[in-house]
Amino acid sequence: MGNMLKAMSMMLISVIGIGIVAYSISTTPPDTSINCDDQICTTGTIAQVVDGDTVKFLSDNGDEIVIRLALVNAAERTDVGGEEAKIFAESQCSAGSESVFILDRGQKPSFDREVGLVFCSEISLNELLLENNYAEIDPRFCGRSEFGGLDWAIKYGCD
Image 1 (tube, rainbow, N blue to C red):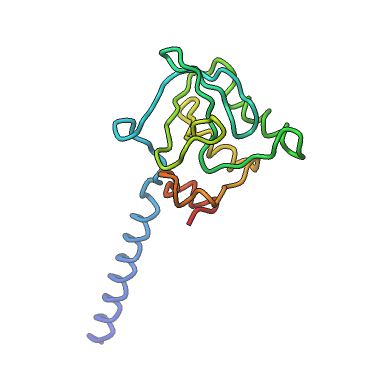
Image 2: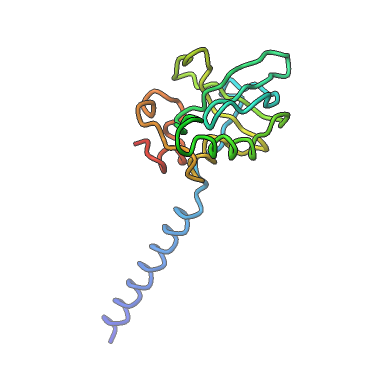
């Protein structure tokens, strides 16, 4: 009888231990936060949504910056789904919206566009486009982008 009680106690302790580990894993916050103390952040407003993955941004000091959204690739406006991607992006970050641009230091400018993340209302436009199927991850840049390791980038295809 004593051995059976000992075995049941060990099993109960194991189950509790597994439960604690599972709980701690499930409550670990995802790596989605960006600390502007460690990044090159610029505050301003959206001047124009050009298409699903490009916006014009007006910084607080008056500089206009054309931004290619890092890691995402939306259809061109003339292609199937392109106009829908632009309309969705505008619904999330309309002209005049206060926003933050975070430069991707791992990427070079592309066609006179800076590359980075755009946040409107503290929400990543890059992530929203992927989450709502208006864009796909562009795996060619996952290894170069400093944002390739964020949870949403990994979720949508960066290794």
